[in-house]
Length: 108
Image (cartoon, rainbow, N blue to C red; front, side, top):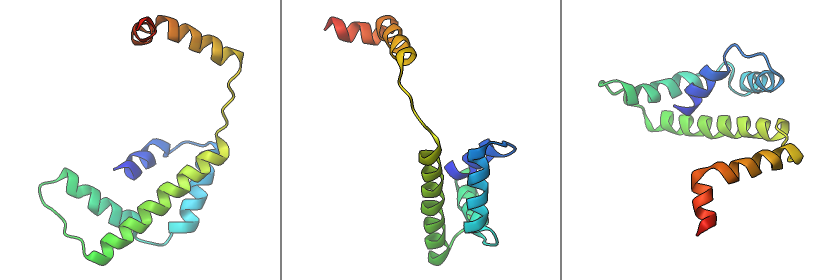
């Protein structure tokens, strides 16, 4: 479900990160039936009729899912940068002093 949902979310996006993901997906999985197999498995969660998959198909799906998620996480890690400067500390201070649970925790 995560792979299908993620694919739906980035479809039509034209950013550097999405372009990298699309290129690597095509390089790794283009010309394979990995997405069709994954969809067959996903459909078993949504419909009454269950599509039985063979052991070899389940192994291929497992390999595909691990490689796909690993690839996406790797691209995110390469491209997403965090910078915690004065604005972050200022906003965090406001959140810490106005958020009810944080105020209660500090009182304890």
